[in-house]
Image (cartoon, rainbow, N blue to C red; front, side, top):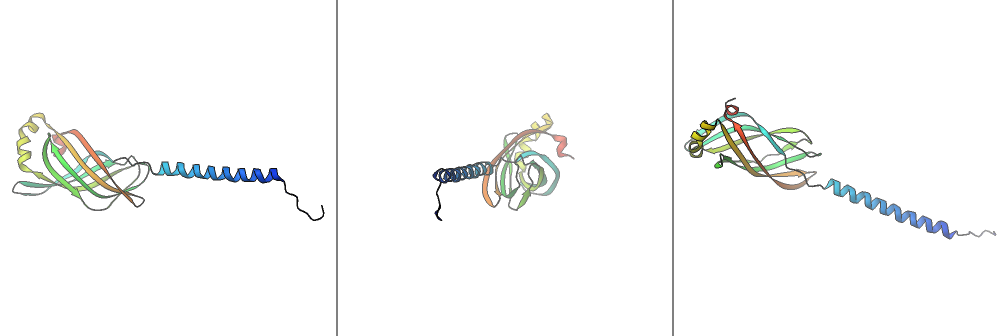
Length: 171
């Protein structure tokens, strides 16, 4: 062979094909990882409330504190940065609540958010007869939550509507 190096064209071609396939496989893995990792988060699900406390009554407004319970259906942790919600009792505006503090939300778990609700006494009194007659109240909450996932901010709307027995307010 006199010190000459022989080239094997078939080996060179198969190495180039393998490099192209490796690149394609890696591109596919990155694409799938991005699609799965960037799935749009679901809004937390309302579970109920607990620890209702009358904070302050003055004029036409009453401040009520409570802990709202939610479930995070996502398979990743979230951070709640801000939330705003409008509350309706028997389809009449009853008040509004805003939260402007950071709360860690664990993945696929329940969590509580302490809130203070400003309720309009006039709206409550206009509903009082119907509420006492039915012994339950239809609660509707419409709002928006501003969250973060891995440092990326986004917002999600949320909605809850359901009947609540009066005795749950008396606990």
